[in-house]
Image (tube, rainbow, N blue to C red; front, side, top):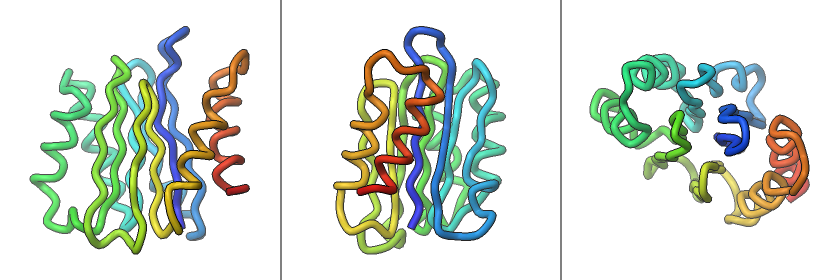
Length: 153
């Protein structure tokens, strides 16, 4: 089981990505980001190259959707992957391959996307969104709240 969030703070423009996973040390391979450029979570059959190459494409000015399209066309195992990308503008692009487990999905909402795999249903993702959208809380604390709410659900 893995669940992640990518988001942009509309007040500061800060970008963030956070993940929780059952696999040891896999979290170090899931999250990728660059200030002012974008953030990426690559999970399921994690391919860290999607994050590294994705950040490079975002640096070149591609949108989240353009970046995702390029990454997927170059990955012959994309049906085993789950990817979420947020670009500097706050646009979210996402993909969940057909071989990511019984339930794998992404729920985008504004300048935020939450996604997970090997989950029972969308309850975890909805709880993550509720945790993230707390008013009057610093951006990094909202990212952490999303993970805590996901773990609780």
